[in-house]
Image (cartoon, one colour):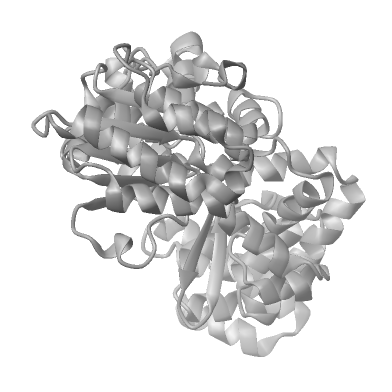
Length: 463
């Protein structure tokens, strides 16, 4: 065995984090029962924790935590063999001897794979009642090496049935294709299955000794979308500063707090500056298509960057309904929006929002268009847009959105504008009749001063 290729720390079974919440839902997945488990989700989704909690006994685990260099065949096989057979002392497995004899793994790896399977049957297959688990953690580091992909497919077909194989990866592995991907003894897990529910967030925070204000668990769920690392980090910060501060943690993260440090260390590490700049621009739009990015921002590499984000599970969610639409996870989007100041000037950022406003306006998304104008400090343009399309928003059932936009403006500005006074008075007529009448009377007077008889009549009709 080439011990100089082996880093023992990669083969240590991790400890479950302190204070971890293993929900009945996770236990109910029965990870330990499936012959093959593929767990694919972005960083911080609790992939490794879910597997550890489900498998229990550590003496039956053959753990291999992969890193970037493990995509090289000599390093991969050295660790794989040690993970599988390193505890066998009576006799050296033949596959280890054969591994030492190979000078060109790329040519002889298929025969090595056969030898590994033969040894697995010899050492483990005889005790069919005892299930063992080969866990390859962070498999995404090796997913680009076709030889390793072929090796794992071979193992799925030829390893003894009591040796279960678990792949943990941030990106699709490419292993479970064809017939393997259709077998009933394969479990596929994604971020959807691993994420906290609103109720589980409340349980977790209580377990941490935190008392949440009414509705706060729902707000945390809305902001984190159940992302495990986000919930845990918020719980940790609240434990130090107090649960009353949780609302502050849920504000746009910028690039300075604990969540931001996680994203920088675990997600952005290794990305080029140009890629970071591109995804920071993309985050300006709450939802977007590739065409949107090309039209609004003149981004010729939009398709390439989006494909990269999908392939690397960069917190990008895709929906397909008459065309592919994308959105970033809300916490990650907040982080990216705060990150822009490090890569763009204030003038550039405002310019992006102006372009985004134009895109929204062309699509009839008046709420988005106004919000982007607010972000670009184009308040007068935003007011003109509200006056022009406020009625369209009301007709589209967006009265509450229109109300919130108007409330973001200074009261004197609204009071001096007949359209804003009219729209606001109309919206609140059933909730605050007295204020509604005041707004409508003011709007009628202002329209009369402007000589706009048509609008004056409309207002008087509402009154």
